[in-house]
Length: 428
Ligand code: PMP
Image (tube, rainbow, N blue to C red; front, side, top):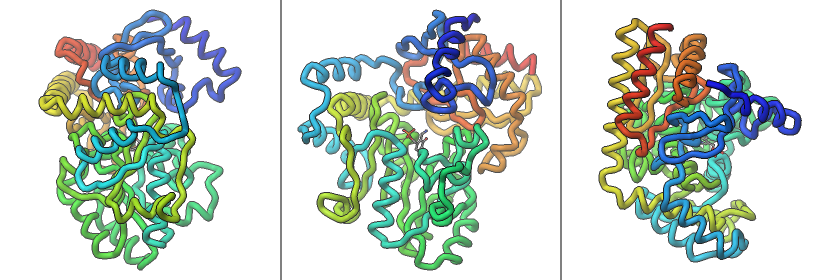
């Protein structure tokens, strides 16, 4: 495949944008080579500036659950745009999407919309601190909750890919309030709670981790966290930015039957426009301004175009009774096919999958936390990534990411993908 135009555009971009990109992992640093510049996308495919077509397993890092340029979303945005693009005043549509979200997600009474997953998690933490009147938080190594200061401590995703899981610029003062536990290890949480009696406001977790590859919670892990929180007056935040409206209509709370105190959303909830949200029961949400003292705001929060896209997306998910099953079946099919292709060729690997999230780790041991995820063989991943790209399959350019399966994928696309894996496996 030729990437001439992408190469030229990347070179030009680097003169005026740091690293040529507005979000680091897009730059292909972990895998080398030139990032492909997207021109357009439709359904399961993304087309680059050189006219190459790729079957897309990134899907804008999650939002495109129903495929690119999903007509109900596109039409809703076009129609809304004609009425003006932003007012900074409340609109009826905000209540409509809030009601819909509250009806789909268990255990929440109110929801506030923001502009990104980062903002959602950052605001949720402030709310939890304001509500509990405590300062410390527990997060898990390898989990990513956006790029706000409190979370850039052993953060996953791009932070890990770029070797800066602890970012310069985060003050010691901030870092000392973020305590680190090990994913899928309740005793690591208990130790921190015991050593910091009455000081911990909140435990924040990706209830299915997606930022160290895909790592589902072990049986009883989320339930155990819930118990620890209940016993110690600690709030539990589920960061469902990846999993919300994807693994079930009501997210992991519904899927696993475990209640969180605050839930964060992003990605799917905006249908591809910049939207995040956080939600909880009345007692907690009413601590927020303008009712309560915890401040949080946004000029473009609840933006009409974003809300129109989000509403169309959630409505499509709510009304499509077969969606979650179809996604599960497609992902399972891919899982089986890739396993066979790699095993047949003796490529050491571990595949983690839950619902429509899947990741291929080139590691021997079971991948259950950050440490086991980091054991994956990066050289193999790099070769795998470029082999896939050459064959028109676009997966995330880092081993610390998840593949996001879209309903737009056909079984022919999946077979094409599995054939590509088979060819590459022979060379690994
Ligand atoms: N939380 C999780 C679980 C995420 O995966 C991400 C982004 N990948 C974020 C928060 C941050 O979201 P955003 O990039 O929209 O700020």
